[in-house]
Image (cartoon, rainbow, N blue to C red; front, side, top):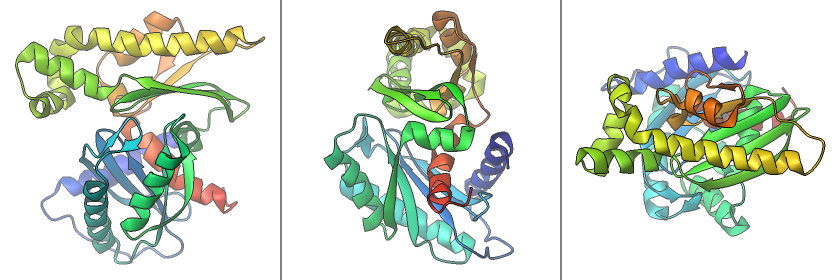
Length: 288
């Protein structure tokens, strides 16, 4: 399944959880299940694929249990993930036994292990941890270019050459900063600003408010790409934005104008990294 089709399928699957009582699957899936857990700054995401990489079920929710890749509310993270796991298992009609997870570039090893500990405390064997850029590219399959992951708290840059991640960086500035400037400009609480930010009907009006944050994301991206290109005879020719914040109206245009590089955003960018995390289980088994 190509990345666009897998993202579209995942969006259909995850929309089902918006129903008051999501129904169980009509057919219990057979074979190995590939589970990915993304402990993000703003959202906790759990996705389950079949052994061919077809999205089956999942859940996501706003949860401020991680900050800049560091687990700051261990008990809250475990409790939320445990509840999500139980609900997804009820829809699948079978238990989840293992999951992969991820970490931003540059996170200390001890904090990376804390992420695995959260997953394991929720009842999932976690022996696969992958950095977020590599996870994103497990889905996107880029051979050359740069992935810019605009998360809740940070912007991560990964440069890809011949299908491999050769350079990574991660700096503060992300979706949380969008919500903070909206809250300040509109006189809202952070939670109200977070909901307003996600409403496509409001984004044209809010674009001038958040444009400086977009430009900061673009500035971080441009600086790291320039540093990479200056270190040798290297050229980055295009950017792919992922992460939920990338879906904000005008994001790609602002980054492209600032960096001068062709910039694209896949459909449903919030799900790119979680799906890639799950797919890393498949690749770990050598069954691409």
